[in-house]
Length: 400
Image (cartoon, rainbow, N blue to C red):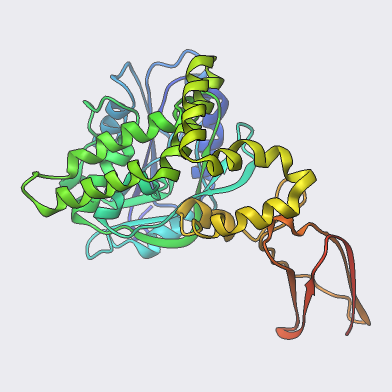
């Protein structure tokens, strides 16, 4: 190719992912960046994956038994020749323009050496769920506080080869599925993650994925176990700083109750009714307001929305610094059911001879906590701010 641009190596581990991997391959193939190699490490698939891979002559394919995902990823990177590295699971995708953007920002020689973008969750059919994976980075210590939320979206992370040489490989002995979190803990000890406010990738949620198969309580338990590997000696302040943060998390009444409620839900879905009642009742006794928010609120909101809003709004407001909550609050596109909010932004091209701009909509204020505010600009000039103070249909006519 000889373009003088850095070579980007993408490694895809795969085992019986024929229903998803074509979309993954196409998402890399259709990037507007020529200097890349795509290595697929297949663990001996029997579902037609190998025949599918043969259709793509540009791929480097190795199909052989492996010792799991970590082993496949490590073998793939041993084959990789790129200056910039990343791995993309066989059910995830890259969004258009990602490789070009990474090549412009990540300097494999002088740095910055690690970049990550934003990542959308999609469903089994590849449809956007309306939710993004939190994408924030504050530093190594915050990354170790996994109980405060995981904010590194694995499919959207790219790093220079020197990072892998110094901090890799993936730990094949790790007795849980969260090998990416373990790897990023090691990365963050030496390098900062630089965040770009661009969509890089999609993360598919489906019933066979490890994220959906594991309950939230089990995911957190395993992740904390990984985090503790990097706390250091009990003789150091870092160890006690993290231990005290975890203790505050565990003994916070509302947080513990919420964790028990999640555990209760996981047990119910697995058919364990005794465990469901045990954790559900424990959560109810520890923090009744949390139990109300989790169980009663969704069932009552249609009939008692105004009262519930007044009761719960102060509680919710105090927790809005949570990274997962920020993802919801910054969304400006319509949701899949056609509703918009809490924020919505759109641009429309008007006819040249238009005399009036008409806005017709339906407002449901019970979840906003305040009035609906409409800000309208024409040719970049603000022409009005209008407040909607009650539920129901609204109509605005603005002369142009």
